[in-house]
Length: 304
Image 1 (cartoon, one colour):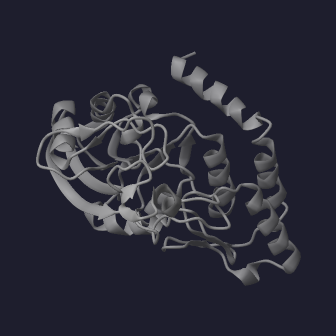
Image 2 (cartoon, rainbow, N blue to C red):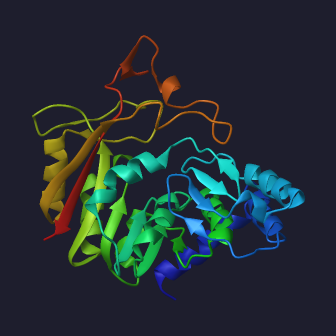
Image 3 (cartoon, one colour):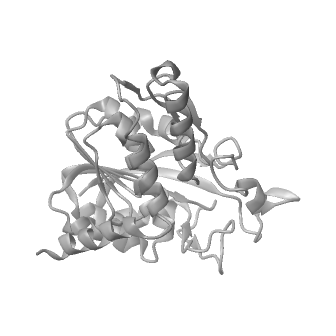
């Protein structure tokens, strides 16, 4: 048996962990809802069905079990009229990037896919295949919950970016959003993406960034905006150099944005604390640790 297959089998066992079992039960519970001809709509609130598709008992069952999967970090979702208002309004990022890609008939990977919100939105392009990579049993359970209504053929792998080179096929397009600054070897991570692309394959990747013209990066002492596993926050020039050294060409800056409370905030479906709690109470241009407040740069590049 291949090493990667062994890892997949082992990680499927994570779905039996004590804290995950109620989430898996929630997915089973909604299977009793009499499914009709639901249609999904890839709009800001990724929408599946309508409120009148369910009777009151079914809607109550749906609501109760969706709450079992809290915290919902990515979204938002509208499932048969149930509004799951996630911490991150991921539609803002998706809509920002939407003009820069066309996935029709392409083999696509979303590395760090969370609960699959972006992949559900990508279905509108009719890609040849969609594969998500994320080792979280919580996010996998949320994906399965939503997909029990969508009934897509998206493949969700409980694997990380460190496994993508070993995967059984390569990709035409890879998205890696909100991942790179969590990696202690950013150039090595980007090299793995390059090796996982078909010839002329493309990536869209983002990172927290700092302003400046020098090719340098910030290394937070312990935490950045209360996040413990942030290793490097580059300038744009530094980030472009990483991509060049990792084997990419035609490197293009797509967008630069500052994260604000319209994109990330606490909701009843997420955590009690969010972005506003992680910034300096006297100066929202700084994190609570005194670093520059989160800004994000999005780059697109091709494999050399």
